[in-house]
Length: 357
Ligand code: ADP
Ligand code: MG
Figure 1: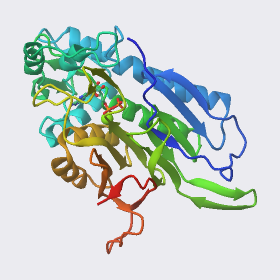
Figure 2 (figure 1 turned 90 degrees about the horizontal axis):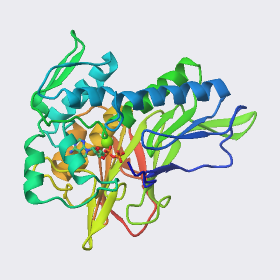
Figure 3 (figure 1 turned 180 degrees about the vertical axis):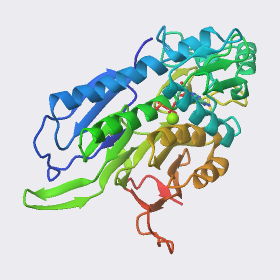
Figure 4 (figure 1 turned 30 degrees about the vertical axis):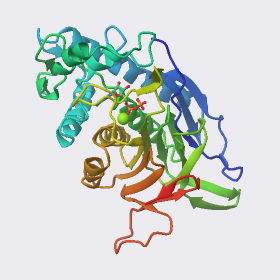
């Protein structure tokens, strides 16, 4: 598959005062079809970095829709034939995916595979399919045909031609697992950035050795209309994940129109809800990843209601009208706190070309 580096959408704002207590600088690898960077702010030994990347590669081999022998590939080859034996953790990810499929009424659907293949966005096959092709692929997308049997350790898609694609949740799961590996090694302060899917551990220590204070990590939210690396605002998080789904991540243009990679399970075309991006914060990166895609596909009304229904989750919706709205635990900086101000995440809009509503 042709690989494009259009993926780093969130990025870290580094400050000279943010020091690391020994260890190697951040390490990067191309895995999960994107650039992954792990930054251990303490205890960053070669072995620890190696262990984190080994775990991320393992998850990629299991979840990838493009690698022969992955669990996804096994389930897809056996669609309509027989249940396939898969790893217990793969079952866990499918269960979470099914949870979000149900909660979003199918707007997020892990059986989106036939549509993703048809459009081929990000590959050298990318093109606008015919309405007939779209109709056929769409008729195969239905998470209710996915049967997960935890006891037998199998997963099954009921109809031939159906296919899983976990592109909207796998990076989140990998970030959670990377965090687990880091924690088990005793590292408390780190940032894991899997192609813009960010997981933070602990808080940022600033100052000079001997005179330090603990502050939140400051994560930039990509300006969807500007160059990569240009942010429109800043989220302050301590230990949460920050994940964005947007129109600028993967797309192609044909006849002057842009076709992006989050597909509507209602009509089979790129989801068009007047949004440029949705950024989610949550304790779990798996949840944040699934929610970002679900909320984007659902649009503001239903998407923000979904976010509000998940404890601890927050969202920043960016509209093509250049307005910005927050939901859930995220509060614009300076907004009056609720009575239970606890657990709120501050968002600061820094680009005056956008309006907070
Ligand atoms: P990214 O992978 O760029 O971080 P997302 O998390 O939003 O962005 O995932 C988008 C990917 O999810 C697509 O490339 C495709 O593989 C898959 N996908 C597209 N539309 C849907 C959908 N409606 N439900 C579930 N997965 C989807
Ligand atoms: Mg996602």
